[in-house]
Image 1 (cartoon, one colour):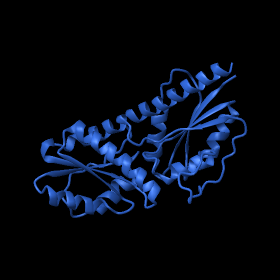
Image 2 (cartoon, helix red, strand yellow):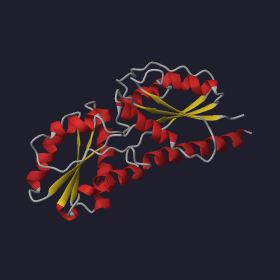
Image 3 (cartoon, one colour):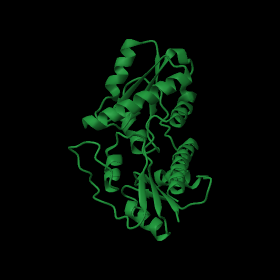
Image 4 (cartoon, helix red, strand yellow):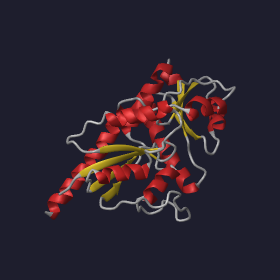
Length: 265
């Protein structure tokens, strides 16, 4: 008999507000059937790490486990590390995961996908910066994400950021959209290039981060220090569409799971 369970994994933070926002987003899940859902963290939040979450769900009798990486990009090396820990193949042949192998005693595991360029997230980004916009036709969007220096992961970051930026540009009717990463350090260079090319257009900067914290409050403003731009530092959470995105992923998995169970019956 199938008993489904879900493990939502996010990065973790020393900031209590960051963790609280994640927990509240998970707690708001409204699924079509009751099932155990555990929120776990890659690091820092002791007692609630990934293996703790697996153990809790298996103790509850879960036979089929959906592991949902609550990260903004498949270009994150953390997403690859977690996947390898659950037996997924490496994204890059030359990079071995840093987490080892998680112990899953009985449950079958399916590893989900991160956010990337989901339309729900594009809508959040647009709503976050809408208050900064005065005359969209004379404004440009700069979407900033964490990024990666490793070629395979850099390419994935760039693809997802570009797709999201174009969706937000269309939603807001902005004149143009560009992207930049913090790793490598591109933000100031890209912003200056945008201003040189279109000196009469304002630049609205949107951070692609799950929850507000060190990167949105300190790193981005510091990297763009002395430059002219509009910014409010709003993150994806606490927007309810993050929960909606999780619901969409989980419900899709449940449909596959029960369709397979009926086929085998």
